[in-house]
Image (cartoon, rainbow, N blue to C red; front, side, top):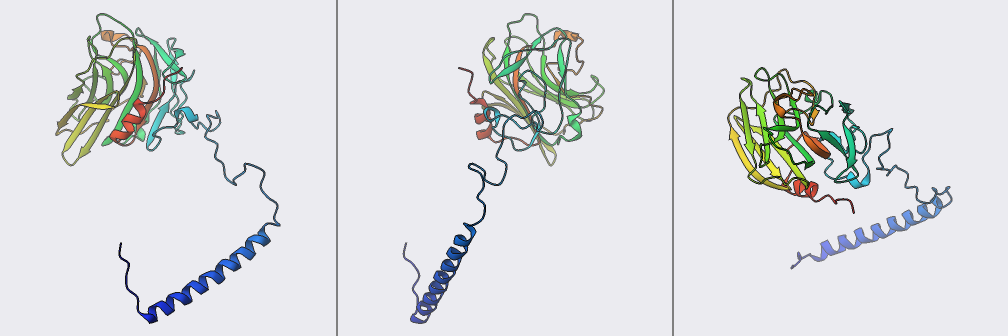
Length: 290
């Protein structure tokens, strides 16, 4: 690139500036020499904390899980318990015998498909209903006679409230995302790909409202598969707790309509924003255990 042209007067000014800069540099060097007399920090001490380990006291995630952390409302590694590692305190409580086994990363919650589930508090208090993401790794067990059953949900009594959910459709099983508007009408989007039983699959849904339009998308292993646009925003009227593994209608632990999740669930994340395509790809690329 051709640089600018300077006059002799400008060049003289530049020379003065350079000389002044060199003098300041020499003064800083002398100051650094004086600072060497101060007690040095211990080896490896940078003067601030860089610990990102999964300390039970802080709730910070382990390095193996530390991907796409911005905007987390709740994050459940499900490594033997229902602790919320986002630091927001929405810890899950197990009901009716939720077990833990091998996960996609570390351990995972294991649901029997009959009546067990996790209740995780009122995340609706902080979740932005106009822009959010639900995501999880699931390993679906083979099962006959299933209708539509839930992976996660935050809804109130059926036909009487708002809310949103991420679930699995009837066999052959795909992903379904749904929400209710202010009139308790249900809106949904479904994937065209089927979930293979016994194989870890990354599932996700997003909802975003701009003006009078609400866009809902379902994501399958890091790829968007379906987009639905409506004129009705999400309502959170009379929603109850956030559930994992429960009936997609929000009737937790009853076995109603044969809609309890059966299989393993890992790395559950709820975000107060719509993730970018590259972020979905990052979540879907998390390493499986050796």
